[in-house]
Length: 480
Ligand SMILES: Nc1ncnc2c1ncn2[C@@H]1O[C@H](COP(=O)(O)OP(=O)(O)OP(=O)(O)O)[C@@H](O)[C@H]1O
Ligand SMILES: [Mg+2]
Picture (tube, rainbow, N blue to C red):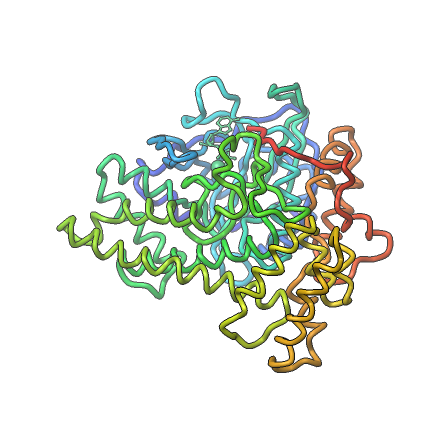
C-alpha cells in the first residue's frame, strides 16, 4: 500500500506571519531505527507503508507526502527567565495535521529536519541521534503512564554526522502532538503588539483544544487547569522536565520537549539533571512554581483580549492566577493520596504523605520502587534505615483503617505506582548501543515501558533496578 496521510492543515490557513513555509532538507542515507506501529494504526496511517522505502523517505524529510504543507512555526519564549522575542522551529517542521481514527486532530512534525528561517545563527537545524531516541523512549513512556504527552512515531538515522561536544550521528524524530502551540506562540505576537494575531491564535486554540470555553478568560482558566494537572502528574512519577521555558509549555496541556529531562532514582526534592540548569531553577520541587510563572506569562499575553482597559484586564487575569496554587495543591494531593492507596480525603493526609517523602529523603529511598513496593509490603528495604519506614507504616495503617474498600488496596496501589519508569542510565545505555548500531536495548526498553503498571517479566527485572554508582547519570544534555 502506498503511504497515504489525509492531511487537513488548519494552522497553515492562519495568516502568513504565523510561520515560514519551506520543505525539509534531505539527508544522505536514511535508516529507520524505531517505528511506533501502534501509534501509526491509531492515526490511521498504514504502519507497513511507513516502514516501506517510500515511508522512510517521508520520515527522513527526503520526500514531502501529498497534502503536506511543511512550515516552521513562529514562537517566542522566556528561557531561564530571559525573554527571546523570536525563537520558532529552528530545527523542526510541521508537515501538517490530520484527524485520527478517533476524530482527534493531530500534528505531524519532523524534528531535526534541517535549518529554517528560525534557526539559531550558526546552528545546523539538526538533532543528534541520541536526543531523538531519548525523546522517543521517554515520551512514549509518559503516555503509557497515563500522562498527557506529545508522542513519537519514528526515529530515522540520517547517515550524516552532527557536530556537538563531539561528532555524533544525526537523527530525525517524527513527533505527533495535539498541537505544537506553546505559551511562547502567544508571546511571539503579544510582544510585537499584534493583538489581532493574538486574537486569531486564541480563536484557533479554543476551537481546537477547548471548544467548551468562552473568551480569553475561559481559555486562561482552561490552560491553567490542564497544566496544573499535568505538573502534579509529573511530580507523581518523579519526572523532572529540565527546560520549563515558556516555549516548552504547551497550550494543550501535553508534556513537550524532552531535551534534558529525567526521572529521579532516589528521592530528593532538589534534584536537577539538566547540564544547562546551573541555578537549579527547574529542580523537581520547583516545577509547580515555575509553571505558575509561565502561566502568568500566558495571562500577560492575553491581556489585550481580556479587556481594553488594562487595569480591568490585569485584575481579571490575576484572579485566574490566584486560583492556581490551590488547584495544583489539590491535584498534587490527589495524585499522592492515590499513591498511598487512599480513596477518601482527610485533613491529615498531606502531612502523612509529606512525612513519607521526608523519610525517603533521609533514607535515600528510590522514588519509584518505594511506592511500588507498598503493594507488596516491602518498602522498608528501600530505606537506609528500615525502621524509619516502620514508624511511618504504623501511621499509614491506622489511616487506612478509616478508608473504604480495604480489600482493593493492593490493586489500587499497583494501578497508581508504576513498576518501571525510563531510568536515565537505561536510556543512556540504549542510546549508546543505538549509536553503535545495536537497536535491541532501545527496543527492549520501549516494550517494557509500554505496560508500566504490570509486574515486569523476570527477564526485564533489571530494567527496574536503580543505577549502581558506576551506572548513575548525573547530568543530561540537551544535545541541541
Ligand atoms: N540544532 C539546532 N539548530 C537550529 N536551531 C535550534 C537547534 N536546536 C535548538 N534550536 C532552537 O533553539 C530554540 C530552543 O530550543 P529547545 O531545545 O527548547 O527546543 P527544541 O528541543 O529544538 O524543540 P521542541 O521544543 O520543539 O521540542 C528553538 O527555537 C529551537 O528551534
Ligand atoms: Mg523547546
